[in-house]
Amino acid sequence: MAANSDAPLAMTRPVRGLGLLAAITASLLLGACAQVGDDSTGLFSSLTPEETQQAAKDAAPTEPQAAAEYWGKLYSKNPRDLGSALAYAQSLKALGQKREALAVLQQASLIHGTNRELAADYGRLALELDQVSVAKKLLEVADDPGHPDWRIILARGTALAKEGSYREAIGFYERAQALNPGHPSVLNNLALAYTMSGEPARGEQLLRQASASGGDNAKVRQNLALVLGLQGKYAEATQVASSDLAPADAEANTALLRKMVKLDPKTSAPVAPAQAVAEQAAPVWPGPPPVMTTWAPAVAEAEATAAQGKGPGLRASSIETGFGAADDARAASLFSAE
Image (spheres, rainbow, N blue to C red):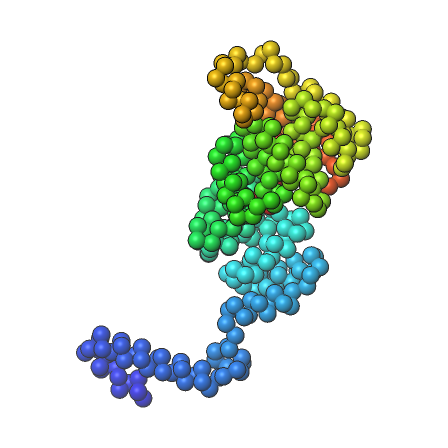
């Protein structure tokens, strides 16, 4: 009845009518909420979306396959729910189904395109799958200056490293290091970026620091062996690699490095006296940066060849290190996105 009596007022005074309608609606909602209370079977549930999502997480199984099935059902019921989409994608990734996980995140991005958490997960997974241009755009969205996340910043650096922009990558790795000093992944990536930019001694120092940080750092040790070998320190490279590789595999890696790396001081560009003094203070690779003229292209070519099954590659340890031939083996795979 009230609605009928208000109809002429709404027609003659639309602005006032709309305000009155909003006030009535608000009062009805408040009354409904007061009547419903904690009864979730009423018109309005007492649970907020955050509480509902937390309840779903608490009920989720921990076993990967069961978790994927659980989140898959929730996602199928409501593909627009961001929490379910993220959890389902993470479960698929844990099972090694990265392409399927990427498809879920891609679909979610059509609905929640500006969400930073989604951009972070989508960007890092795209980076793992070598979709570098996509990853760069997503990670830029995910990087929140007000609340910086070292993992996102590390991944942004790795995207640049995968493109060969090692000097630009260093800036991001140093930002990540400032947020999480001493983390092995940050030190590893920063060391490799310096090495690929022509400062292997600095890279070696950082890798030694990362290796000494404790824990299972097989990837770091294998990268240290690589950097040692690239400097011609073959005996020590073999020794370090033997920590995670069979002796025969460690020796095979060193032999391959000997073929790829040709360090001949006589072929280096002449060094002026002033430059020699500067290099004494901050040692660098003799001559032009190696990324331009020596071993970096050789490493990339050898790894790409190995990935295509056309030739031998560096032997990997039983733990995936990023050092040897794997599904996506190439020089850039030495860098981790965490």
